[in-house]
Image (cartoon, rainbow, N blue to C red; front, side, top):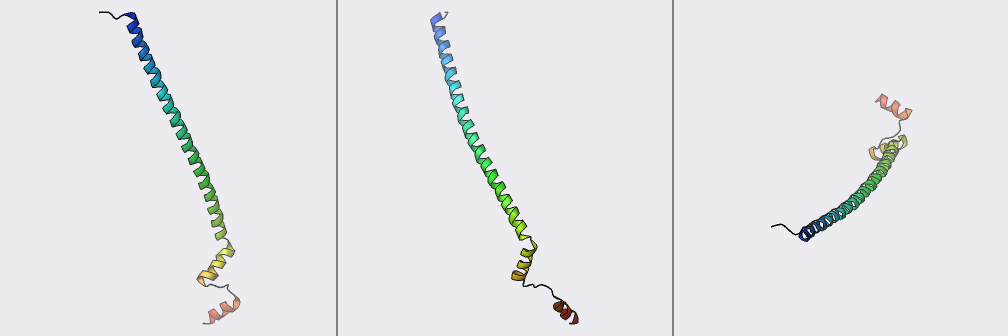
Length: 95
C-alpha cells in the first residue's frame, strides 16, 4: 500500500516541529551555559584582582619589615640586643 500524500506531509510536518523544538531546547541550554560561564569568569577575574592586591600589600609589608630601622627595633625589643659602643668593645676585649 502506498501512503497518501497528505499523510506523508503530516508526518514530515511532525518531524519538522520536533526538530524545531529540539533546536529551541539546545539554544536555551546554550544560552544558560554561556551566562553561567560568564558569571564564573567574572568571579575568577575579581578573585584574581583581589589576590593581586593582596600580593602587592604583602610585598609592601615585607619591604617595610626589612628596613634597617625595623631590624634594629626588633633586635632591641625581642632579642635584647643593643648598639655597640667603644666602651662595650673595650670592656669586652679586656675580659
